[in-house]
Amino acid sequence: MTDIRADSATQAGEAGFGDYVALLKPRVMSLVVFTAVVGLLVAPGSIHPFVAFASIVFVALGAGASGALNMWWDADIDRVMRRTARRPVPAGRVQPGEALAIGLALSGISVVMLGLAANLLSAGLLAFTIFFYAVIYSMWLKRATPQNIVIGGAAGAFPPMIGWAVATGSVGIEALLMFALILIWTPPHFWALALFMKDDYHKAGVPMLTVTHGRAATRRHILGYTLLLVPAAVGLGFTAIGGAVYLAAALVLNLIFLRGAIRIVRRDEAAAEADGYATEKRFFRFSLTYLFLHFGALLAQAAAGAWLFGG
Amino acid sequence: MPIAREHDLHRRRLSRNVGVGLTLVAFILLVFGLTIAKVQRGGTIEAFDHSFRPGLAERHERGQGQ
Figure 1 (cartoon, rainbow over the protein chains, first blue to last red):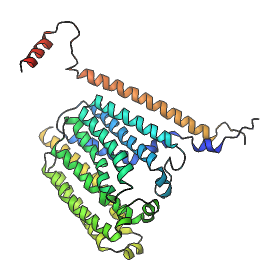
Figure 2 (tube, each protein chain N blue to C red; figure 1 turned 30 degrees about the vertical axis):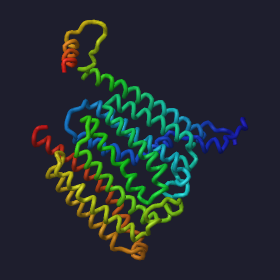
Figure 3 (cartoon, helix red, strand yellow; figure 1 turned 90 degrees about the vertical axis):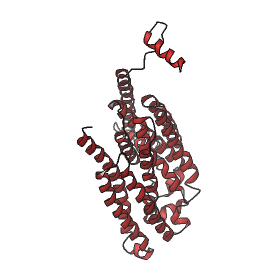
Figure 4 (cartoon, each protein chain N blue to C red; figure 1 turned 60 degrees about the vertical axis):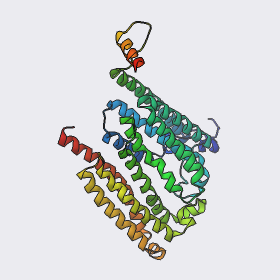
């Protein structure tokens, strides 16, 4: 009978495959894939189905790469925040060097392969997205300015534009408006989260708007960005990829979103504390549905157009 | 503590090895599929290869004439 003991330090650094998958932020990746697929499907022009599939896989891989680089860089603050403490790097299941290596390798593979599968424009946009998220947002803005979310949101807004570029080899007004929709949606979405995860960002020293300008100012900012979001979302309905189906969905969704933002701005901290931030949590959850249904409506609009006009 | 046959360490290593292996196989299939898709639509893969191709020569001349 052997007496060898499995060293606990070795165990801590022994990642399972699931830990590597977690490193790529699969939930963020699913949103990236969905918006990129919509951007690709609603764009004019034809593309071989397998080339389209492969391109989406490489966009997802690029999103995963930026997630891994973000986890490598942010391990110190992830360790402090309750929401992120169980991520693979702060939990010790993946070593920081491993996360960096995976992030860099996947970045290179995804960009080169997207360039070979689709075109150089989409590969360039993917490379810029990874750079923007990992360097501009994670390394620079996130810890430097309360506007981190506003500018950093651009990284999450590029996927539909990349999908569009894969199909067309160019970037049109429709792609720019899809970009604007996600860009302007991001701040109210994250500030609602920051309102009810209130200690996390403060403990980690991340200058979220709630920490630097106070919670009342954050509530006003949520309403301000929602007011900016409405014309961008509805305006998309008047482009070539819009139509009655999209416009109807956008009007309803934006009215609900606006009502939620007005409710948030009318509340003070005492009221929010009293009901456990129910309104803020509802607004945050609905913001995810809001984005999903906007892009779903674009798909439905394209399907309706194909059905009516025979493709 | 003696190492059991099914220690958590082994389970994690197995999942990692199988996962990485399947990922590599998936990548190979993806590149193979891409190659087939590109070749099927390969209108522009024809190029100069030291043998005369009238179609390419005409295209080349048209390009120079512009």
